Length: 41
Image: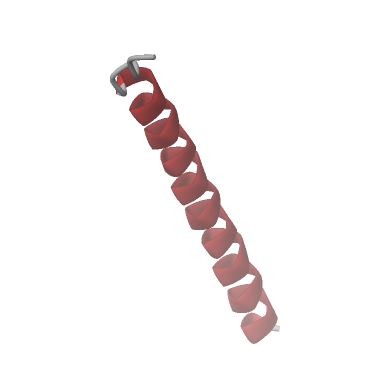
């Protein structure tokens, strides 16, 4: 039972870390897009 609980906690922790990394990447992409110089046409 303890192993199953530990596995569930580890899976939830991994999911939270993954979601935070994705959020940070999305925010960085938006920041990069907003601060890129406008290409001269």
